[in-house]
Image 1: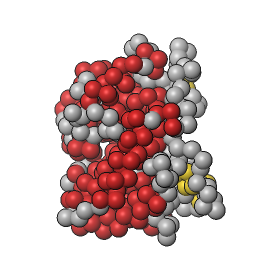
Image 2: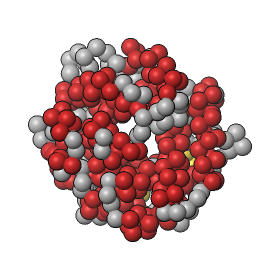
Image 3: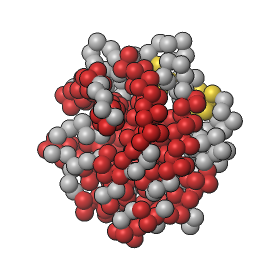
Length: 337
């Protein structure tokens, strides 16, 4: 597993035990819950599957993608949350979670996965992105959710829309690898990208959350100069000295996933030393078995939620290490320029 990643990443983050904790949590159905006995959501499930791809665990990643194929609704979507027995726990539909399968399948293919299987999964991606694009408002915005009964949310989210841009772009790349064109996805990505880059006030105000700060850079929505400017402007608000990234600027809670994701954003703008240094702070959130705490509250270092080690936190670290090592994930989160 770990030997698939570059030695520099292995020295910094011993990904072997971390990947093992994700594998140990994955159910026979292929579903990857947040933690043993917990629920799963499509976005974080895909994130964990991508980490498995980066570590060369392609069979387990295939099982995770097959779970998505088996649970996909006829309209191309998934519900927001599923319990371990496969039952729907939350009927709302998260559009960002639906779209992310495109990035997951592209990562699988770039990691050396079977082209035939990726071709089969393209039908799943097509239905998923078709559902997401169909929700597009005249403004070009995509509502963050679709409520039970089919009513779209009244607003869109900046971080989620940035991720949707990434997923639509991944879908275009995946289609091209199969000799196909999907100009509708490309156009939808361009519309969402323009809103993110030019009309930030259009979105619901979640500016206190770190994700709204770094996601336009992480998802590749912005050009290099704009992305660097954005990351530099609020870095002191979200990154305390010698620690990771605060989930919110008005709280003292440092979270593993946000820290690892922000490291990817820094890498995309060419600030690799800063990215390595930031990723190294996740060592404070690592457990002896290689799993990662969801977060710690500083300065007392109290766990929040207490005792929680999440697969999506572990996956974010594995993917960040792979990006910095130049692995398959680096081909997804390419340098901006």
